[in-house]
Amino acid sequence: MQITTSPFWQRWNALFTVAPMAVLFDRFFWQQGLGLNLSLFALVAMAVAMARQGWSKCSVPARWACAGTALAAGMVYVHHSTVALAGTFGGLLLFAGLVHEPALRSVFHGTAQAFAATVLAPFKLRSGIAVLRGTDSTPGVAWRWSRTAVLPIAITLVFIMLYRGGNPRFDAITASFFDGMFELLGELFTPRVLFFGLGLLVSAVLVRRLAPGLLAHNEHALGDALMRTRVRRPKWARPLGLDPLERERRGGVVLLVLVNTVLLVVNVIDINWVWYGFTVPEGFSLKQFVHEGTWLLIMSILLSIVVLLYLFRGNLNFHPRNNGLKLLAKVWIAQNFVLGISVFLRNWHYISFHGLAYKRIGVIVFLALVLIGLLTLFRKVHGRRSFYYLARVNGWACFAMLAGLTLVDWDSTIVRYNLQHVNPGEIDIDNYLAMSDKVLPLLYADLDKVELQMARHRANRVRWVEHLDPAEFRQQLDGRRNRFVHRMARQTWQESNLADRRTMAALKGFAQSTAP
Image 1 (cartoon, rainbow, N blue to C red):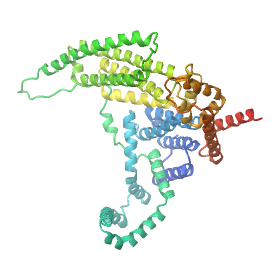
Image 2: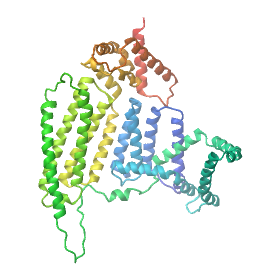
Image 3: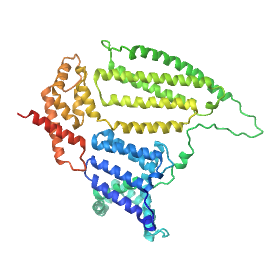
Image 4: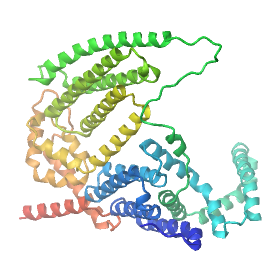
């Protein structure tokens, strides 16, 4: 359903949409933590923006951004995780850019559009006031004079502050006046007023079209198909030959033959070593094997992508003898995909030995996006696709990945996996106390497993964890629990979330079951 536009509504709709959203922003977030308030505000803001635009006029990318943001916003209440918060903020920014500009299709342009709207929002105040006064009215005398005087006064104040800092007597002469002025400004612009101004800015960007058509023409000129660029020369000039392009093709063939040969050797070694029957030899540094080796191999894959993007950046895609070059490029992409699987197995072997951690999950996520990038690069080489195609598809892959990650309570998943790990002497016990409060019930329920892991660590030749005393660990765990209970006692409905409620209920149940 789309809002009807009568002359009265056309003049006042900005005030009737932005002001209530700003009041809602102030009511939800002033001196409050994030929880249910963020979920509700995101859903309400998107509903208002979609109602103003009309569902039928919303583009498919805007609908996908709305769906992904709604999912992340819901997971803020369910899991209250950092990735859910990041997904909601990023999704709202993308949605704000796409919903008001149906012509935009990519994540990059949608996000850039939202940033541009945020920068331009304060400058739209004058036009908004003019609309309220009447569409045919001109700015008043006070507005014209204030606009003329703002810049000179601002520059003068900068110089006055510099002179005050460099000349003590000038500072003493002007101190009473400027100190009184700053006190007056402090009374007028209180933190609450400034916070409400932030609410106005955020609400305006989400529900209003503030930068119409700013990037639409730029993206409209871009397409998925790569176009051949022809250089028009005067009729009297000799036509350019294929010599420069042919030399580039031959150089590319030599390069791809060499790197394919080297990568084939690396892949054969990895398949025989990492893929089947991998064991950790005595004295072997698994940390160096994974931490340094993994990122070096990922960097090699990224460098391979950059090289292929350079080779197939232009008219070499249309060379009549480029079939061999394209075949070598596809083989290199396929080999890099195999290398990516080897990198994943390295990380998996490390998880099997040392347990889960956020960086290890991050490696898997990043590697998955790199492999998606390789698949799209294969399609670019095969189908003469443009760089815009790669940016658009991979941008949406990143957004989909971010939205999908919000579905999992990663803190609980990590702790639950590590508590059940078959190698208790290599689990990072210190990381348990660095997790969020959601893992407290899991740790209390399996303190015996934590103590077993501590005992195995104490038997190791090299001790690399700090928490090896069960009594000290239990004391710190009790402190975390007491702070959580105290926080829950002061928690407002705006900050509430299902994860905290589940944690509190589990702690109460654990206390009742262990009571004498």
